[in-house]
Image 1 (cartoon, helix red, strand yellow):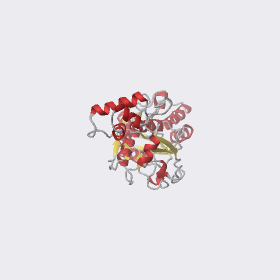
Image 2: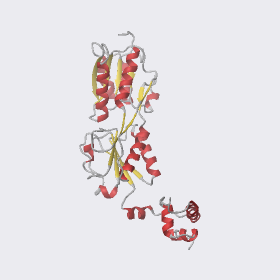
Image 3: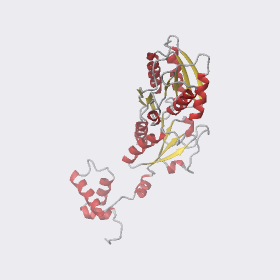
Image 4: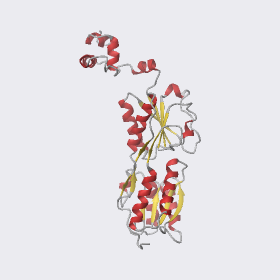
Length: 333
């Protein structure tokens, strides 16, 4: 073999003293029960000595797949979606798949595929925090929904957000709070609808529980304005429950502008437990959602689906993380 040529599977077969079909079985990970462990080891060692690397593009063409999955997210600016990608990419890489990201704004209607022929460019879709009809433009490409409505036809991996919200209310009620303000994300997504419903039901179940709601965009300035509206009420809440940690940062700003101490005059909670939660002062009481695990479990389910399986619905529990932003109300109600 000339020193400048690229080694082939035939070269590996000759080096290992086996057939090319044996090389294909071993390097394709399909040798178990068909090739002895010693032979498999010899093939891998021969490939390593020669510096052989399979032609992945040619292999994919033979298999009729692209080994590529698309992760659809509503935004790249929210810190939540970075760990989702990390978890999905880690599992995908372990199975020889790559992950591309496509941003679909949640107010843009059903998504159009960025590819002329989606089924020829990607093998499957992970759609995070989106409605099932967002996949209309992808012509039946296999999909798994993340943090989305489990009532849809696609397999889902979601968070137990209702339990997380109930845990927050129980924590605040245990401190003596009865007047709650909801700084609510003005986004029509399953996860935020469930949070709102669980919060309302949990407060309604408290003796003397009162809940006021103010909607905002998912950004700090809008959240500050929403929190200010709640705090301007004749009977202002003693605790603000925010739909995510960024909204809680806006609630902090509203409290400080009014000269209110957190948590002495006002308790504030968030949701998600992104890095911002511990950057705030005081650090934020919130519900930790395992975003990286969401991506990993979602990719595992999608690979099962692509392999002909029927993945089951998976619910990942959140965990209440109590920090310095919550305390008893100044006057126990």
